[in-house]
Amino acid sequence: GASSYPHPRRERAAKKLEMGSFIGPLLSALAYTLLIIITGYCMRAFRVLNDAEAGGLSRVCGLLALPCALFASVVDLDWSSVDGTLLLGMFLSKMIIFCLTTLASLSRSRSPEAIAQAGIFSIFTTKSNDIAFALPIVEAIFPRRFAKMVYLFVPLQLAIINPIGLMMMEYGTSAADAAADLARGERGCRRRTSALCSLLAVIGSTLMSPVMISVIAGIVVNLTMRDSLPLCIRQYVTFCGQAYTATALLTVGTSLSVSSDGSGARLDGVSSLVGVCLVFVKVFVAAMVMYHVCGVLTHYDPVTANFAFVYGCMPPAPTVYVWARQYGVSSELVGKMLVFSLLVATPFIVVTGLIVDLGASRGDMVSTRGLMDLAFGTIDSLSLASGAWLGMAVAASARMRRGLRRGLLPPP
Image (tube, rainbow, N blue to C red; front, side, top):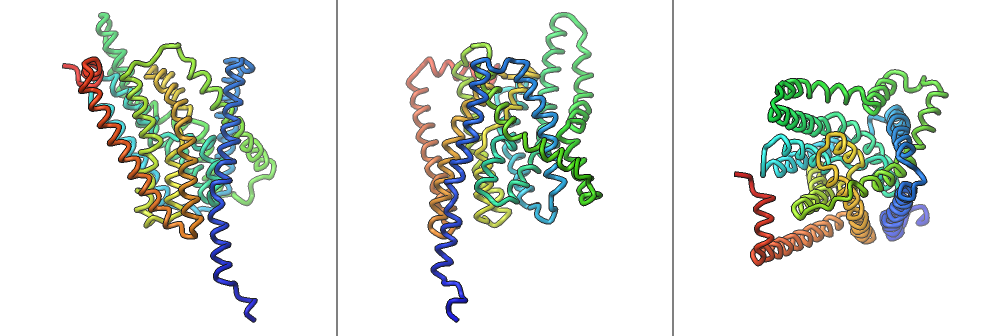
């Protein structure tokens, strides 16, 4: 009879209800994610955790929980559900952002110090906080296949993109140290040795990292003995991996507390401008690039394009600050901008969720693209207005002209 066929109006209403439930899970995921981060920050700021205990938590998170989470995800991965087009789009997007950041950083100077800075800045604009911050949000608002893709972005970033920036920092710091030794009258053979060995050193450390070992082992087990993996091992990696999200978010909070302390030195005007530009590229430009690159490759599939945009808004990982301190490259700037990027990215993700939810509530996700284009136009207009205001301020202030000339123009 007529009752055996679904009513078209009821189908459209159910589709609207299903697609319009975007902003609620997004706000919930953001809320508990930020609460755990704030808890970690307060525990470190009020000295509930000291340096040794926070470092131990970070090591447990990076050496045990994260490798187990990646291994468990890759072992159970259904390769037929892997979106190769999305993976390619993310890789191309990250490489575009990396190259643009490097070129902009080297436009003023090509000295060893500038090359090292370009390396850490390029990593800052491409390395998102995938597992700790992005994964809970993606799991809450997108189909599960996208959460599986987030796990694959980690080895892609770690194996291909990060080593380029690390080699730039390795070369820049070693060359600067060799030049300083030569200026003190010591032999400058350190530069040649480091330049020749930095590539092998970075590649070796990357391949021997627990993250890469867990991913490679997971792929091997998935292809050879997926169904015959002992139950005790499967339960071990599953339970250890489940501990990663909470411990990682706590680690993010403790690292923000440490990085915001620094040495107490204030950033000058040029450094602040550079930092704001880095945050703008990481949160806004990265989202636009990923949205359009993945959109072109997938013919602007609504769900995939929305995922690419939301993923592009994610703040950088605290690992960037760890590398900045390890190499002694702009650690104060990176630490402060890490906090600032988290404060900027959170409301921007909420606004993105409102845009997507508004398009979904109309029953046609394609309309979301029009709203995105409207948002892009608004951002472009604000950027032009801000640039015009900055130009007028520079023209009217001799002090600003002297500062920009001294800090931005190439040295003679």
